[in-house]
Image 1 (cartoon, rainbow, N blue to C red):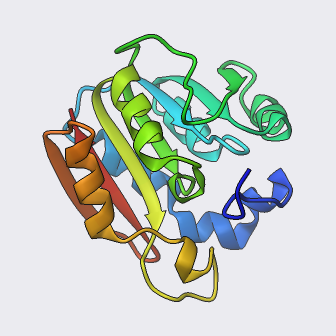
Image 2: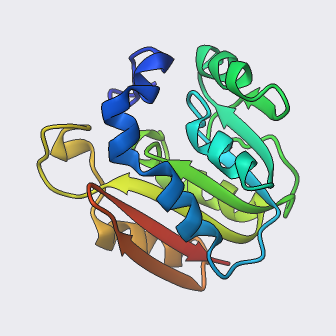
Length: 180
């Protein structure tokens, strides 16, 4: 694991302050808006906050996380869903097995950005969503040197074969919508 990886407990991921900041309901609405999505893979699911939000919208939800303790937390909140321990660079799903892959404030933590995004491209039929911190100094979230520049993500998306790249600015975060 690299120094960018979240190393606090799963319950911190659901603190009231963080819940307000991540705008899960708004993010999921934006991901689903005018799109035919029935299944989603939550990559780096953590405590399953976004997985839970997708599930409440009627989607079939799967989740992976590199840490077993996070998978255990996600299963406590969503016993109906399938969660596995796996890194983003080695997703244990077949080609085109889900409609969309979602990275909720975790893409900046992966060891190999290109490999992780290519894996998401491989398992997705339609979309990949990256929810990330704005590239600016903020009192919360990771330090600036761990955040990703929008230009880097756009270029990476082209390198990985995506045909579309959209940016949606949120209050504290940015949602990148990548189309296959």
